[in-house]
Image (tube, rainbow, N blue to C red; front, side):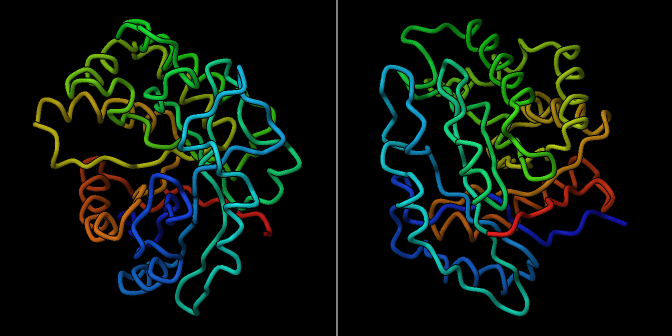
Length: 273
């Protein structure tokens, strides 16, 4: 059976500093999900725990004021008979590979996603003047740190937007060059580890942005993950209501490109929040 498009586990409300669309509210997200037949969605606003001191005391604006006091303003999340709405977060790690969530706070999150690719935040995730070759090495180190973190829960952790252009955001082709520098052997090792940890792999590619040749580069990690037996979930990473409108088309394109079946879907064991 083909992979059914029935969820979105990566959504931002306007509580996130980078998502200021007044229409991007939990209520509107739920209505969108119902219209599109989604059974589950998860709110994953950017999050850095107030009890975790970042390296050098510095946080990017995306994470500076998004602790639990801010994100929990979304409560109570609206619910419906058609769609379950879960509360989670998009966490982060600084360039010392410290994840900004305490074990105690992890219990308050139904689902946690962590990006390896937020390499646009100077002073927080990358040092100044880093080369593309160094970014490829850092991408690998960040991925390994995520996979080996003792605080991330099995069955409730997602690897967010694995190939997005924020790996090297200055020029479009740069993130493709960085991805090409990561050997297959490294990716096989990492995705086998992801399967062991029962971490989900997020599908999040705006495929229309890429040429046929470029798609080979961005799909390569996912094809390796598939071969390693990883499970996949859908995440729009929508920050605006307009992005929600494009999400369903993107979901169908990604599932089709990877030829995924329903038994390759990641089913989080959502914690009680």
